[in-house]
Image 1 (spheres, rainbow, N blue to C red):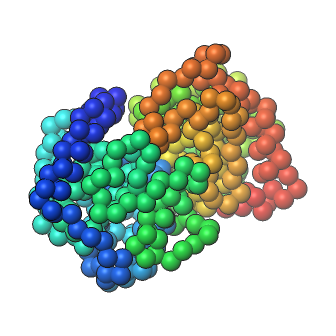
Image 2: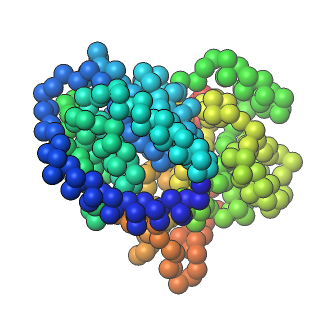
Length: 401
């Protein structure tokens, strides 16, 4: 489905629906009062948009699992997030809505509506920061406790049993964790990544694939992820910059470079590699890997370099060093959160221009043109940052497998 159309519907139809459903609940007196001390037996978590967001809510899910060990913990998400959701081995059941086209969306929506209403959940936690669809859907399936974020100017908290103020000054992992704390999870000052599972079979297959590419275990393997999701493509670092960085890393450290991406980003990667002078030394696997193969590749790599998108959070979760490149979005909320990671961000007067307050919808208004914030991150500064942090005297410590 067209993402712009989905967002238009979410705003211009979603907001009136929120007020209508809220009014109907008031006159039918169907609102339930949250009892924090309840011993929940059936819990549903909901998060639709973004694999990276799914990964960042896993610590909250794990905390709920520990707080309510006898509870059934289920997850509702988009079909594209299913494999990432399964990889943590936390959820008892995973339900998905498919938005590939309108007919699949309607079919899976109605199917889940019927199934989940009959589950009679004691508690539903909506982890969406701004989308109205999630709170509407949760209110239709939930008969008891429903909690979520009260995000400024998003008109979405009316249907929750209780809500917590969304804090735009803390990392999203902490925001998600605050919802778990709201219903009794143990408070933590530092949120550690919840490991996701790489099956040994997938590791073995990826090792063999790397061997076929001429990459040995002793080689330093660096992943460059060029693309970003459809959500605001101006988050991408320029292709020629990625190419220049790849050349410098190959020339100075004889590393092995693998470019990754989705199937619809294969041409983007090919164009990037076309700018390289050492293109024969780089490998393009965009569109060729399953999710499990992709996380296995990350696990076997020494470093991941990516713009603001899912691989940053997957690498953080797998405890692999990662370099994040930020412009329209802020690393203070969405930056790497694993060990030995770093990010680059110019923090211009107009940055960040996409936030959870504007539903991640905005147009670049920088006087130097679209993408100026990403272009201002130079190849040299990223290279020297990587050199100093990962190829210094403690290289064996920083880049160990």
